[in-house]
Image (tube, rainbow, N blue to C red; front, top):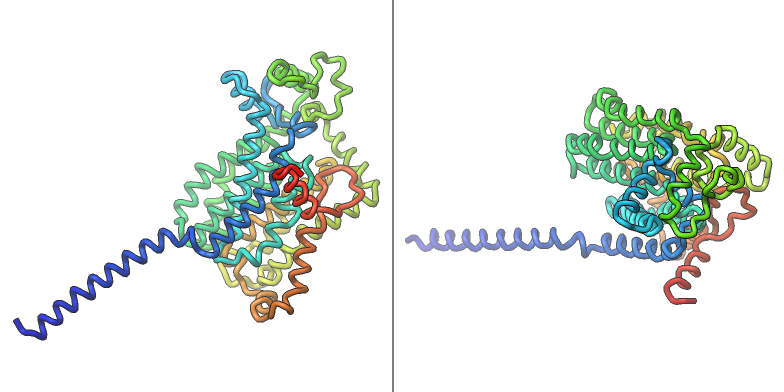
Length: 450
């Protein structure tokens, strides 16, 4: 055999083996690297910090108004907000389980799910470090940590659904899911869960427009026929949204719900057994079933008459919401976006805000809850679209070209934004000072017995 040909053959085999070895190494690295990269380690570290801060809510008892609202069921007839309570009632009755234990386990799971989803959203394209101030904002994940009366609310289901939908959309826009897969998940998972959550708490109705916007971005990006696909997809949940209006509840239903829990919950003091004393009960969400719309509007009027409380909630709203609009403006969203998936959002976003803003009129004095939910919705819309959040803005240039000394003012500003204030969940607060430093101190006390 010609020595030259022989040498070429040997070289070819060696090269082929080399390519195979390289390909195998790349395959192994591809499997391992997602768990070992700096980005993943940072995400895991942020997740653990947030989980550590949730130690206080996890160890706190469910009580008061939130517990009463969680226990609303269908034992007095079909009624708004009753689905979750009915599921808990059936599980407790048929399997001899403690309703309180079930609810506490549920909210631990929901808390972990919210943390996982929102950290995953923030980690897109490896820029988590720049997004920490928004992720740790007092009105987002840490809202129920800073005000324990906000923990155990059904709002956690609403925020989890926003985050899950945004994460699915994000993966679709990154070409990891196909548009067909997205549509299947929308119709088979997201829409049924939204409909179920409407029956769990009617506040979900006010945040359906934000899900619509997430879907709008997908169909704008992939060409096309948004009106043809979006409207039919959302019709079932729109239809279910009428049920809380029709089945608002009565005083008799509230009493039947109360009586259904006697014997299942020890020392159940949220509902009396007799009709005569029900009117004196003031700290149970079950009682709201007997309210007319005038009752929460009356609470709103009371809050607005307190000038100090109104100013504090206004400051909280501005601090929570304005950063997202600054991001939109810097990314040129409201003028001439260069991506298909953001077209029309400059028109849709202000309109979608009208629905939750109505809660500040008809939703009583739970202003902090509405601020929290609006913040979560804006976060979900923003981070659903990786192209939008990765638009280079002037601040990026400042950060990337700055020395540590030059970054100090920005770091201090971020630290103040994250750590110096909180959002009260309701009522008539006299201060919003507090937040991270108090939560850290309390969490250390839970873990180390201080």
